[in-house]
Length: 120
Image 1: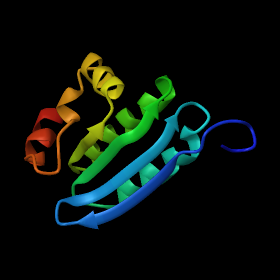
Image 2: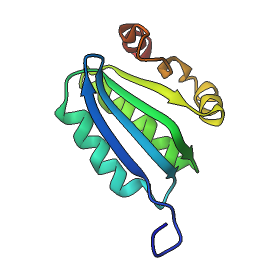
Image 3: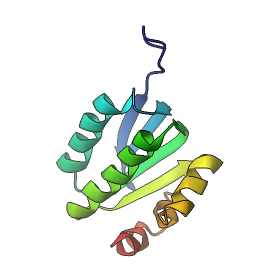
């Protein structure tokens, strides 16, 4: 936790044959998103391979937290980059279903090209 009592979001990234993996840990909310947003923009804008977002250890705390995921997906789509959420908790799955974005959830072994075409 930081000095204001808010949790800190950590980001790990690595590349392999399936793409650029980004793992988030922590709570995404109005307090943690601003700095994370800049880092995610850089990652999306600077790459061209498949972007695989792992949210297994991440909690969507509010609309701002969910919005940064939506924003990341839209930015990737504008850059003709495949975007896929490879793991998420049940609550995030429900949020994505309600937002009609469940097509973004896949796995590393799934055909991510289908995710790109469904996102258009």
